[in-house]
Image 1 (tube, rainbow, N blue to C red):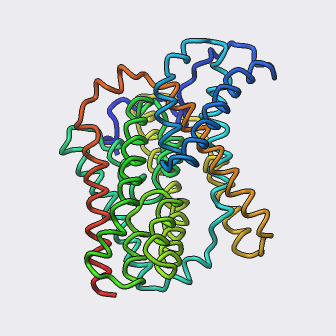
Image 2 (image 1 turned 90 degrees about the vertical axis):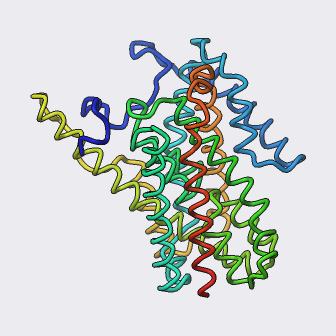
Length: 357
């Protein structure tokens, strides 16, 4: 696994992220308030713009956060921004599990589910190959492919929380986040029109949209914009993709864990590897299992789903504020290549499969 990165971080920082606050800073309850308050205000603005003008709240939050990235220089905001981009992100990842269950997979059917796994696997492989083509490292391609294959910004955040900033910098992660969010918005806009132009039936259109649009809400919205039946199919297909987030995270975590261990042993370091999976992945899996064996009240599911969206919006905004905008611009157009190619591959493979339905 030496191809992953020639300079892997120490084992103890396997799941590390960018910290604005100094380790020695004393964190009191009040120290969290300035950063959290700013992120909350931006989140409210993003939600208001989304409600009144239509663009996804994630895009609005990301763009406003990038515009305000200079605020990260203010040390008073550091603790709150770190908390939003790390702790709130991980809680949001756990809560994603409240809206999915194994019943979604069974309702999809065996052949479509196998096809969905094949499409997702091919998209991730495309991300790895595209990264090499555009002179990026393999983990950047993995992040682009995983985000496109699973659930857009949510998957990007979950994968990056495992990969860590030592392997993919904040600015490069923001490129993936921006690329997948914009690509998903464009897909939601144009894919239903393309499905209509190709005269696809409701089942075909629902699978195409559910299997190729990145964001959950946009995939479901795109499906229902075609027809009610297409919306139902798109919902099942999309949630089945989200269910597969857990095994993808587990595989990535163990691959990185093993490669880091091997690197430490070769360099003569003492290996004190964290045992098992990160707590937020375990929490995600447990919540999916709970939702699969117990019928949770609709109000609980709705509250948890909205809380997950809000916390992930907070995490996106904080990550954007912590980004180095000059560093982001310096990467050039090549950095968006893997996202473009994986988005195109997801659409083409989904379209090929629906022709057989």
